[in-house]
Image (cartoon, rainbow, N blue to C red; front, top):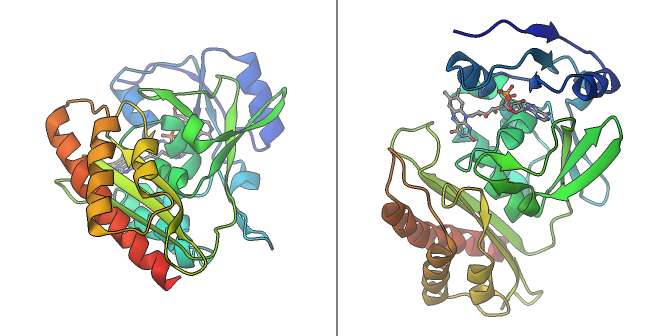
Length: 290
Ligand SMILES: Cc1cc2nc3c(=O)[nH]c(=O)nc-3n(C[C@H](O)[C@H](O)[C@H](O)COP(=O)(O)OP(=O)(O)OC[C@H]3O[C@@H](n4cnc5c(N)ncnc54)[C@H](O)[C@@H]3O)c2cc1C
């Protein structure tokens, strides 16, 4: 049973930020796909609910001339899935969205809500880490930008303060010869990941060595995780199946999985090994074609 609350529906960002500043016991709602579940379970019972679904100024996807992509926080999963801007290496975003929940949830759920919710099994965060994205936050006091890889601090916890809103996700230009891949393992299609992995590989101009690499994991720790030691296995080397296997093993050692009803920590570590290898090889194949 949801407890009574006072409801606000600001239509402008500054109004929403002023309300957030004024009411400490408030909660922002957007698509409601995660928050309503928590409210129905009585786990969250705010006195004030600030519905930001009317902030149409935050509903956009922009691609700048230099290749930077900006996704407004109110953009739905479904819009990202179908967006024409996500081609080449960024086609991974649409692939990721196709595996996220059902069309119904994708039609309502927003990218800002997903990132803010902070579920370590969420699909977008590892992909955003792999493409080196940042989160733009706004409050009545101003704006700040936080790299996605530094955004999460603990289980469902981020650096975002109560009076801040996510306004945008920014993806810097993708270098030439870059391939990005993502996969998630789950038992029921459209369910949350048991473990997921996203890998971005940039090859040197002659296509020989791995110039840059980012490996990010979902549901492999209390937060989405950048597997930096595993990245070091590949950086500067010509990738081989054996190196991808080693990177998977190192990533499993870096992971710190939580055991729950879906999987034990040991099973998740085994999944990390297999998925980093498989997704890494796919990213490499894509980089060679890019
Ligand atoms: C049946 C089902 C299946 C799902 N499967 C998946 C899945 O496979 N993969 C996956 O990743 N997710 C999955 N989800 C979760 C869901 O996709 C996301 O959590 C959803 O996109 C959240 O967006 P929302 O707009 O609905 O957020 P809301 O539910 O409205 O809000 C979620 C949280 O974010 C905060 N918030 C919302 N917007 C902002 C903002 N702009 N700035 C700051 N804080 C904000 C709210 O206060 C709240 O704490 C599933 C959900 C359901 C119901």
